[in-house]
Length: 207
Image 1 (cartoon, rainbow, N blue to C red):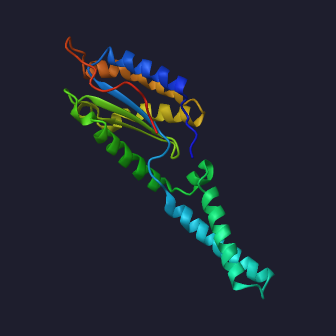
Image 2 (cartoon, rainbow, N blue to C red):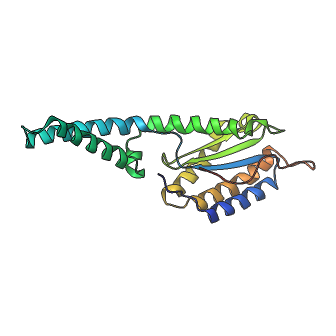
Image 3 (cartoon, rainbow, N blue to C red):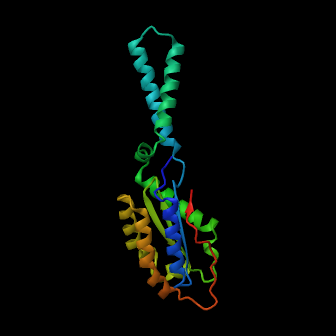
């Protein structure tokens, strides 16, 4: 299990900052901080099988005339323990390739964008700030009106800023700084109108 990098108190601060941003723009900002983007069980299974086999061979080397049933028992125990321990955060993260993590995080961001209705705002001006804790990756995903102006590369500076803070253990500060930087940009790209309504909840999404 991944320990959240954002406490409840931190989340309340971020939600207040979202409100301040949306008071200046017609854009709808959603922040999501999830433990992980997918279940990475294949690497854990392969590691468990390898250690189970090694455990069985080690037993046979130490006890060449041992009971075959005990060999199987050793393999089951070693495999189960390896699978369990490989689920711990740091070790689990080490079993994920950079390419697999990148694909999973972007796929989860797109899924969340659709699930939470970010594609359906009136001006098509929604922005998702997505943090996936296990993979230590950040995605900023804007709807059509924003991406038409900026393109995906338009968010790179904010992504790097937030990642830098997360690596230092300062996720809250990173989110607050990113939101502060985005406020004038979003106000220019999507000016607030008199009849603007808050179409999406400001609450931080947490898994």
